[in-house]
Length: 288
Image (cartoon, rainbow, N blue to C red; front, side, top):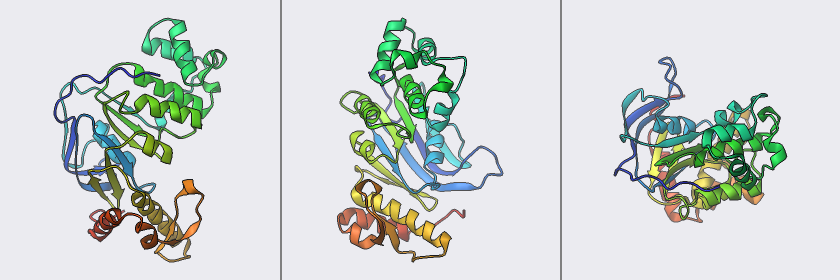
């Protein structure tokens, strides 16, 4: 799978300024994030980190323009070319009358041989390409919808959990396709795949937690993920009425177990620990 290069870009693609964000445009929906100020520039690759339900998807939808800030402002560059992908993109490809071959043929144009060749690079053979889309696995539907990335040049791509249901070979294909050496455009993504967190080579990190977004102008550190998992573990134990708030979960990808403390893991990165402490010490402005 090969991406067309991004078109010439303005100095700023998208920006949020002092924005209060809710999960939808429904005025009765409670705010999720407050006082969000964030700017996306050409070539910026931003990884969103935070516990489930912290507001990563809400932030991504606000950046894409799918939801409007409750207060504050969103700026989008004129003629901005972007593509947003989330779980609904995969779920929408569930027709019993359409096939991957027909779907991509309409979207991308070109002859059948070219479309079959593209699907083959994604691990979908000619037999799967001719099956109804509703017969595809969740992973195969993900791959087909991600193939839309090759449709036209984009300034900005936003991916919300693209690794779900993908096997190692498909993850490697996605990482190679969107790597900065092959596609130098701007990327915002949230993923539970530690492999993608590294392979997509983020230049910036945003910690989403406690109703706030903290932008770090550096790639993620191990301590950032410990922070995310520690908070998730502490909340789970608090809800169950067991354990202490200080308990944390070690990195799932390393096969760790529950236990330990945040301070012990944070020693791996003094910089990450200091940033984490600053975030935890800030006042929470949004009540959930």
